[in-house]
Image (tube, rainbow, N blue to C red; front, side, top):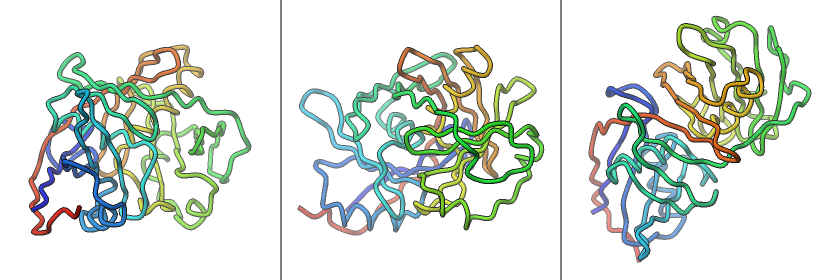
Length: 254
């Protein structure tokens, strides 16, 4: 029997934010088997977590198509399942999570400062473009246009990057808004993307001079992400809600 919890991350109510499946295992099964579980769950990420003797955890994330190096919302979901505080060992190094103000869970991620580049796509009202380690970022000047934009996924999937982040300055208590597209890894539009905020935080900090900001990812589900610059790290904060439990009638292979 395989048990998973489905958690809405970067959400303070069910059916918002970004859902992730989390399963706590005694050991990691074969990669191919975990990939089948992620494909069966068909969420943007399924998190597999195994306790270590030192009190920390090994954590891996899989989309329906591939394993990824860093996933913020599934890390938040996993920390929520484990009680809010955990030290994870991952492909992206050590990630520490703990309670923050006002019920937030805060996660310390490596910053991903973007470098200016030519815009990879010709979007109306483009202000600037940049690229981090794995993602393109395009700033546009019209928040309303960004919220309403219906993109063609073909050109986005053809980009030589994991995701495309499109962002604009925010209003009404939000410093910036964003949308994130990753069709190349099976996620046409990601509801809320914690890892993208490692790039967004550094980009908007350079633009505004602020080190603590609030972002809103304007997908259909939507979600609020709090960010804070801490040296070469970005502290990403959010809330999470467990919405369901799943039991698969399969044996975890040796």
